[in-house]
Image 1: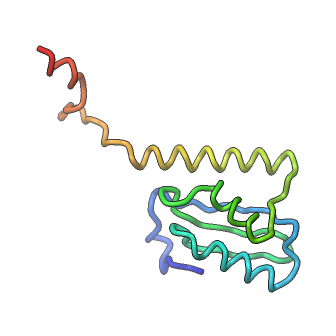
Image 2: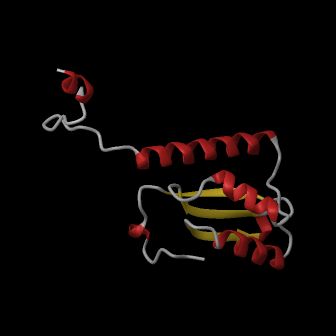
Length: 126
């Protein structure tokens, strides 16, 4: 699935990850995985590499996070690799997604020539 026609169309909150799936063996597995992930909101692209037992997923971090991808894959019978290294990567991916979502929803910072938000509470008390 590919919703981007041009790489320049990607936005700041789009991210791509390689995900190792040991149970990925057949073309039917690839179709199942693609269908399971493609229906999630925010998924932009899913590429399956059978020979490497990996998928490459591109998604919008403001709409979906890595934990949701992991849970969706496990729900259709494809748990992720459970090695020490991959568990660390999962944690890192989830941290990046949560951080990106918080940054995307944060109010705009004040500018040096327009400090609206600076000390707003103390100005109201005067």
